[in-house]
Amino acid sequence: MASFAVESFSLDRLAEATRDEVAGRIRELKQLSDFVPG
Image 1 (cartoon, rainbow, N blue to C red):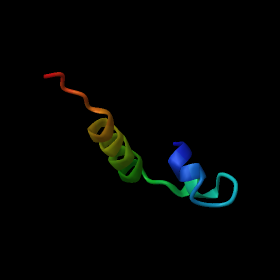
Image 2 (spheres, rainbow, N blue to C red):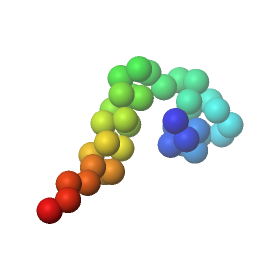
Image 3 (cartoon, one colour):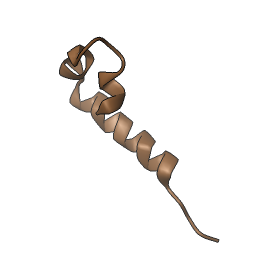
């Protein structure tokens, strides 16, 4: 959510974010933070 907030002044960008955009950010975060030991 913070990544949307820093894209525009105040919380304007966050207020305009769609469900698909939020879901996409969550997918990206999961990919970036995925750790498979081995």
